[in-house]
View 1 (tube, rainbow over the protein chains, first blue to last red):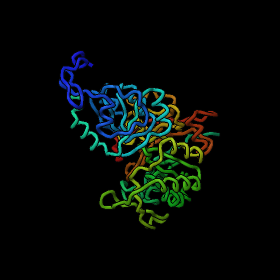
View 2: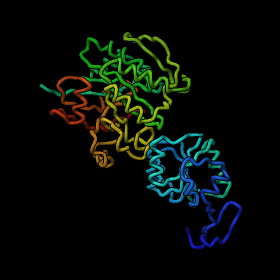
View 3: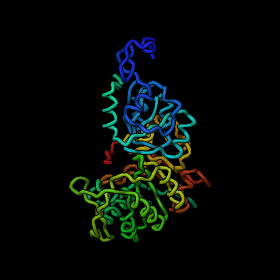
View 4: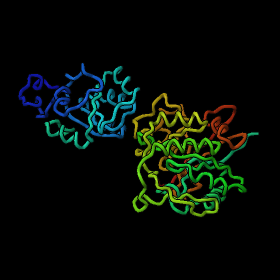
Amino acid sequence: MSEACKSGNRRTITGTYDNDDRCVMTLQAITQRLGLSVCWGNDLLHREVTGGYVGDLLSDVIANSKSGHVWMTMQVHVNIVAVAVLKELSAIILVNGRQPAEETLRKAQDEKVPILTSPLPAFELAGRLYALGVGGST
Amino acid sequence: MPRWFKADLHVHTCLSPCADVLMSPRRIVAEVLRHHIDIVAITDHNSVANAVAVAKAAAQSGIVVLPGMEVCTREEVHVLAVFENQEAAQELGSCVYEHLSGVNDPDVFGWQVVANEKDEVERFEDRLLIGATDLSIDEVVDKIRRLNGLAIAAHIDREGFGIIGQLGFIPEKLPLDALEISGHTGDEEAEKRFRNYSRYSFVRNSDAHALGQLGANVTRYFLEEATVEEIRKAIHKLDGRSLEATSACGMSKKD
């Protein structure tokens, strides 16, 4: 977070804009606006989201997601938690109604990675997130 | 006395929709003989239905045919399963079949021919074999191991369907026997790229989808006899068994 953003130089219903005019929302706001279920991480919803990334190839997510991104994926394998930690992602959203594997949930709790879920497919969810003003890497 | 066996543990037949329809049992056996391969595993996508026919076709040839399959897990990782006997292979086959959905459209994906040992068409498989099962990679590897099969992560150098591409890295606790490097990646590059995984043995197989692809990319195993247990010993470097896998570069492969 930049200084300007912390002080909130511009506010909308959905979030705060930072210096580069990127919308920064909290997980709480996104969860409410997109009707997500919180599988784990209720205490971490104050985290800020700087953008989003969609991907099911974990090698690609490692290569291209950015710190603070919320990550939408179909993958429920425990490795997703490691990727989120490695890339300092704000949260993982499982799409298409997928639920995390047991081990994944345990690991997410250990590593403090919020796991959210949505019945929507990734395209739909990413579109709605974008419409709220949360962008990608540009 | 142990001796060297030349093995190819990843061969498709005309049952795989993406394979050439000429990959019939007799033709495969003839080609395998021509390349002096001693052990061949039949590993179609998500099915073992043609393994028996190839084994029968090879009955008088001296070639050891091991039944197996290339399972596509829920994470869309390809895992090779190789068994000593048909019963174990069939058991995994039934389990995978129950967890596979969709109907094949031959015009889109290709024919899925179940053949007999005389290279005759027995039937067409209509389940969508090219799809993914809804079994996790942990469940698949666990099941293979329980059935005393070999679990090999297929073509780990490929982004699509390779374990590293799909899962970012190889989960430490996953009890895989070995990692397969495809013909796309040479030895030097493989050594550099997969340095972190030196705890595993690397093997090479043809992943042949057409007759012309057989013979390239094989692994030589130093074994007492041509069995799965002996191969496992070689993979895990036990009792003086060993293996030698080197690439045959310049060969193009179809996936």
